[in-house]
Image (cartoon, rainbow, N blue to C red; front, side, top):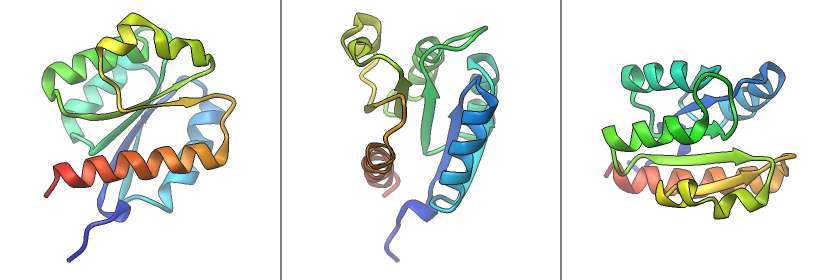
Length: 131
């Protein structure tokens, strides 16, 4: 049986409720299950519980930002597939972000085509790990 995005789970971490719900609706039709968290602390706790195939996270959030959460996730599972949302393309050159070896950056405001291309890329990475 050929695996595809419908076989994958995604955890999306975003502090903005409107954006969180918008992305959730987009993802629900594409993947097996979508898990939501409001910040990095909640995201890390949820990650340990559900171990999703793909993590999508905003970079800047209260309590624990996406970079710190991603660092802690990579300590648990170094090969975890992670996509980072950021409003600033310059952030891609951020030393801390580079050292995490994140799989992709998704620039805000969200470009629909870039988002789906990034999701397809992350999905192919996650699927290759699950074989």
